[in-house]
Image (tube, rainbow, N blue to C red; front, side, top):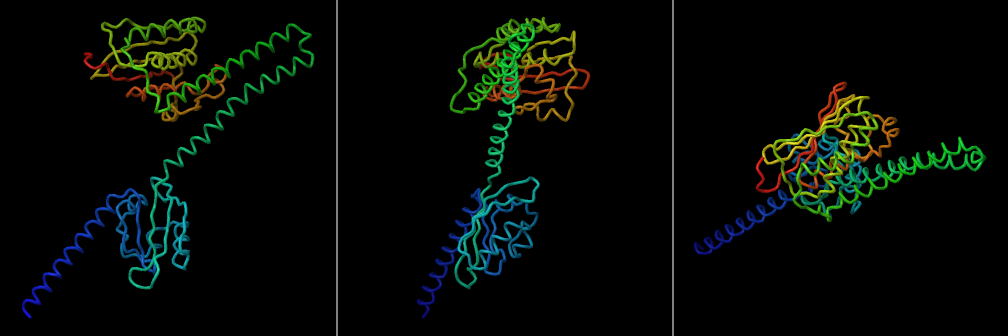
Length: 366
């Protein structure tokens, strides 16, 4: 009997150890899952909830042991759980957490058959917030692009129809309408070029063609391109000669485009007789290219959004200046593609300063 009891005790110990190992594995799996997981009994009482679920739904207390409807006050989820507990085998639903932060979740619920303690339902939650955000950005992009194209197309169509209706016979009027067609055509051409540039920059599979580029060379190229526009607008464009030049590994064409976009904006939206200053220096292994203007400045409420595609502070003035609404978005993507960033400081009535910050070439002293 003693030997039998010893064997029984050993067997129980092994079984308990196996159960403990299985429980630990289950806990480790649940902790490591990105998806939220919830298990309830047939009355709707929560038996298990992993940490991801607590985080996704923004729960302040441990939900285990409580009825789901008391903890998860989300109507769509409550409706799906009711369908499951009333006998429906599977339910899928898209729900929105109460936040903050606001999250969109895809919930898959499965009924566990039986009436014992293991019966009830299991629910798995996937965070689709980023997917929803990307879908919304895509819809906004298509809508904004259509809107931007509609305006010049309408102007071209109107001018052409007016010419056909008899304006061709009046040289002084005909010239004005033809100039409008040319102006709007160029605007559409710029929009197309900017869209292609942005698409190329957003394509993660196409890396910038990096080579050793001198900061002084980039600034000189931008000065040569932007100089005529500044002179035409009566803007003083300057670039003080720095004591030291710096090198960085970058796509020279993209870098010039980004800096030119900043300078172009600083010239177009400056005050009459204003000044635009291009400067660069190095600090802590980074090159800082800055463009400072003496324009009207940007109200603080617009600053968080000015690098978004098609976002304009002054929509009417921007279109009058021929802007596409994509210039600053291109600057941001160029900076990010090179492992850098873009910053802005602005005060109403005192001008703005944009800084393009990029890593220096390895071994370059700052």
